Image (cartoon, rainbow, N blue to C red):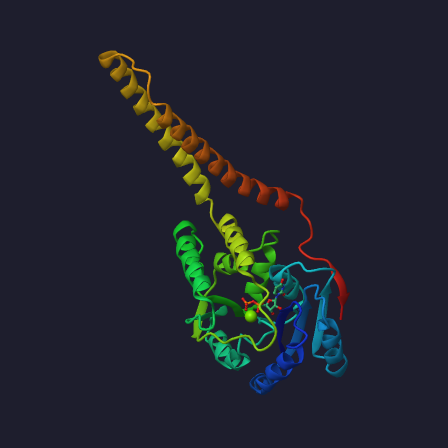
Length: 309
Ligand code: UDP
Ligand code: MG
């Protein structure tokens, strides 16, 4: 018998745990008919509310429900990794606890796996219910990211994705500490089918992503999947050298022809400010990569488990 593992990262989702469970198993009769068993793995990402208790209640009632609980909040990326490690299924699917990823789509997704696709991914084509400023920055991020990275990162892509065991193993093999899952999916490749749907607003509770958190996350994505900023720093340095060289010649020639009237103090200050600004900026870029490397070489575990049901 085949097994499908449903992986659900949860961070303070007490109101959604039961709703998700009910909604999911309302939509799995399709899999029963196909002879595919379903296991549901909640990954509690260090919730401070009653998430763990809610999952435990379900676990007692239903042996298909499992839980891994982290020692603290490690972030959704860590929860996804833990879920994939725990999943025993021949197939695995990642879903949000807030029902923004409709379980009703699962049969369609499975149909593509049967057709020979290795992974079926989803993207939302609208950003309905999202603040316009956030949509604007999100769009910009995807545009820049796809220009500077060889890995394809699809605009509006969700983490809602059905994968075969082979893809799961590929993702698990990428044991990096700085995990930008959207990039990792693209990086591992495999034959992927994209399904589109209109954005669905979260059922209950609040989003865990503030604008600032998303901004930092986007920078992480850039450093994790592109080294173009380093090249930009180098090119900018070279450009400024050339500029300085040309200016030196201009000034020497001018002095030889017209003598040397002492002037140009304001322009000198401007130049010093500009050049030192560019230097600090480039140093900052290098620093970003260095800090990521530093965190990576520490080889800290991606997450720590407190409870495993
Ligand atoms: N999540 C998590 N750890 C975190 C933040 C979020 O496991 O640190 C989970 C959250 O419980 C939800 C999913 O990741 O199941 C998506 O989070 P959310 O709905 O807040 O994000 P959005 O849909 O607004 O992008
Ligand atoms: Mg959500």
